[in-house]
Image 1 (tube, rainbow, N blue to C red):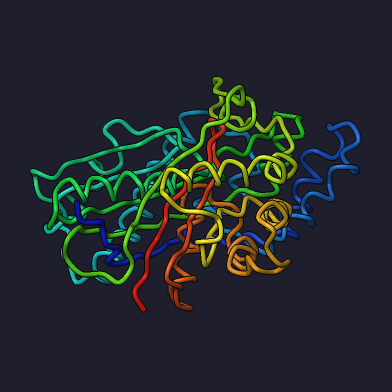
Image 2: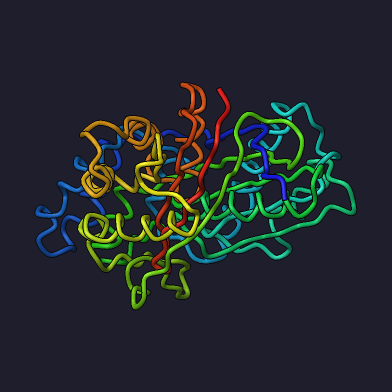
Length: 349
């Protein structure tokens, strides 16, 4: 089977910009008097590496407690707009029309929509009535890499067809004013909204090929990352120190995944990694024995956009492509499961 080629990539963010210093000040007002030893945790905001990020609602909207219906309405409106913007740009970059899309893969874990997002925007986009829809939920931060893997295999299965991958996450809607937990404070300091779209086709054009893909699922790690669902909506689960986990566990996992691809770590010219936060980036560099500062695109994206979950690694891939990819790159992301998802990219100079 001929590998899928990456024809285009585009990203999108909502219009509302939140400066990290303003979020930090607001968090003091919300949690400072109610959270034991809050002052000890407040430094998290300055240690993330984030300067600004984007949200689908104005800043003040998040300062009032919102229930599930309000969050869902905001999700539908914001996610649909980001989907259309990212997808439209990616298709234009590939010189395609929405009617040329044969399959759309939609990756999202921060809201629930039934009918799914792809159906809700189908008329606005101009998709054909016979389009194949593949909505994917629950991959979290690994969704950008796993979604690319899923989309590439669908492209391989039907050579010559156009596969559109859209990842859209509205992490800001999971901000909880009622949860006085360290996990909620960390989420408030990190997460943001954004979308990315990729067009793939097998057997026809494209300098960047999806060479192989694989995953590693660690046993007994359901408590590392995920959602807790209650009447108010999603609440974040972060119950282990992820940088420490990355430092000790990432390299052995990637070695196993690459082994199944018939590759070694030494075969990788560039790593393109979901950053999580500044400390996670440092941990990745340590785990993979990379020189400090090697993951410059990761630090730039986290500074400019925060952690947008699934789309984030595709924002980093966009920057890496603009600078020029080496012959082989490995795109990696960690997410609920706890899972490492990897995609090997071959690029022709």
